[in-house]
Length: 268
Image 1 (tube, rainbow, N blue to C red):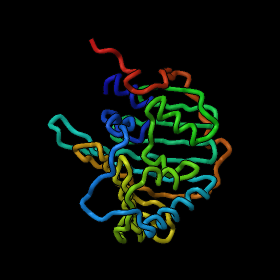
Image 2: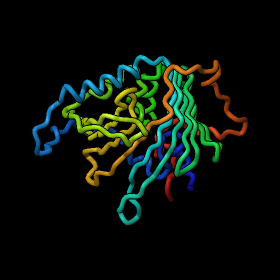
Image 3: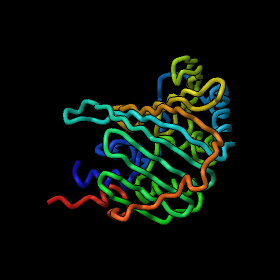
Image 4: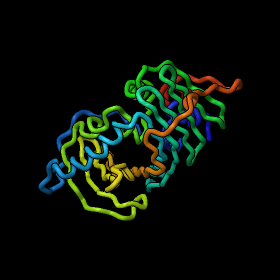
């Protein structure tokens, strides 16, 4: 893996593989008209009731941990989609703690936020990006996206108001049905369509926890799919006092905390 890609993985610390990470994170395009699906569509109360039950449960938790397995498509050299997969072990504590350890089709990445500082580290290359951060997870995630294009596919679930994050720019919501396959538990399936994405969401019928989400970005002409499966949920677990503490290795190589393109060496 070349130096440019390594730098990109460290500074973005995404739950993605290194090479196609930029295909997931894009600046929001100008407002677009609501998608026309050729159907009678609306925001159905039944769908929003399911979403609200899920977001209320997540918002009420003062701490949580879960595993997110992300599978997404990105074009290969022929233009056909390849699948990339990562596994992120997520631990967070409101209002100002987050740890994300990510394994996958690329080098391991580690992301630490302790309420004061963000540190993104790639053990294989020993590269480390560090920056002072805002004092809440919500503000930190906004700043990380604006400053370094960092976006986790589960961001909307860990902010302080998940319902607000999910419902922002929402234009279509409806219930699809039920499943007994996803996550090994009964789930309710809803579709949520916003200004930029079409999301199919599986929510536990009994525990009200998200079990799987599939997103298609509407501005993407290829309609590549991005799938996240959630498991190992623990709400309000007992966390050690040093659960979010991390000390950088003495031989860590410091690099700027910036978007991947900003840290890439110039081409000759």
